Structures are given as C-alpha cells and as structure tokens.
Image: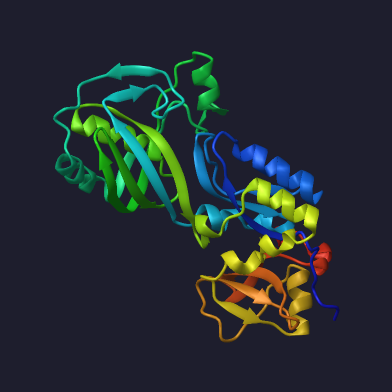
Length: 312
C-alpha cells in the first residue's frame, strides 16, 4: 500500500503575536504566505495581548480542539483603582478610586481565593455569543448584554512583581478562562476596582513564547526558504494520546472509515494510529458497544476514499 503522505504545509506554527495585531490578521498573513486556505488559530488573543498564538495549517486545522483544550500560562499586569467597561486597557474608564490602602500582602491574600474551580462572568466585550451574535458587537452598538456566568479553572496564580498600584501575576489556567474578568473580580474583591493593563500568553500546551516566531521573522523565513523549520508536525499536539502502528489491512479499513480490532492499546479511550511508514494515519475512538476502534479523524491521501463514518 502506498505510504500516507501530506503536503509540506500541514502542521502548526507557534507565533508570537505582537501588540495591536488581531489573531485574525495573523491567520490572514499565514494564509497569504503559504497559499493554504485552511488556516486557523487555537485560542483568540485580544489586540492588546501578546504572546503564543498556535496557528494550524492544512489538515492540522482539524486538531484545533486539542489545542484549545490544553492548559495555558499567562502573565497579567493589573492596575488597581481604575475600572473600565471592557475590563482592559482598551475600554472606557468608568471609575477611579484611591488605592493607598492596597498592599502587596492584601493582594497575595486575595489571589488565594481564585485558585481551583471558580465562577466567572464573561465581559460584555467578548466573543461569547448572545442571541447568536458575539456580545462585543452588541455592546459596541449600545445593545444591553446579559453577562453569562461560566466555570473556569485556575491551577496556579502567583504574584511575580508589585509596584503599587500595579501587580504582575502569572496564571496557569484551563480553557475558557477570562484573564480580564479575573482582573476585574480581583479589583472588586479588594473594593477598589482594577483593569487588565497588559497580557502575555507565555504558553499554550506544548508551545512556549521563548520558542515562538514573530510575524516579521516568519516573513523573512519565507523569503529565505526555511520557514518550514518553524513548522511543528501535526501529531506534536497529540502526545497525550496512546499510539499504535497498524498493518496494511487495518490501514485500508481505517481509511475507508471502518471499525478495526487493535491489540496493545488501552480501551475506553482515544488513540492515534500510524501506518507502517510512520505517518499519522488517524485518530481512533474506542466503541464500547462493539469493542472495536472507530476512525474519528482520518489524515493522508488515502482519506479521500473514506466513508461518512470518519470526520473528513
């Protein structure tokens, strides 16, 4: 059987998004440079935020969900005594108060209450849908938006620096956590208000800001012909899944969307399957009823003949 091969543009770029740029503008740049229409980012960064923005290219766009679910690390600069309508520096100031009684010890005590699973209210100026439309569009049009409460998870929150009235925090969190809301809620807890002054995403899953490429560096790499050196393989974000190598018979069945019997792979889970050439073939999910493995996502040239059972 012919080896499963992919175009050279399938993979993930770890891009260091600069201040003032939208996540969409970074995606548009990568789309223009690569000529690939299938380009998407994993986790929006606001224009005022900088740092890690994983950009998936080609078939890797089908793995965005695995990136979005990964934990993230942020460095947040929060200023006390000022409240804005967007909870960040881009908003309109709605309140200013004296913060002479806010000390480092008070802040350190307050942040302890944000560790673990917390309930957040999403900012009115956010991408959360309200009646089918992003709430920030409604808010900017002056249409009242009922804030939604949602659960978030903070694994670590640590005070890194303090120069009154500004604190710098590092935060490890799960998906869907609003650092803007955290800044606002921290200010409310201390009774003085606060807003998010600056934000940098230091890490998203396996991707770290110290290894990220800037848009300018990426453009230079394209001109010089070595841009693929920055491209991570698709399966680099699947390391937490068990792996199995399948023979030609199972390879053909998987590419046709058929269930297969696998040995040596834990049941009740999801696994990544490789063909004998060492190429990522598919993501398989265990079917409890049939005690067989069902293709969930199929990759490679053979995927073109796959049936409707697979996500193509």
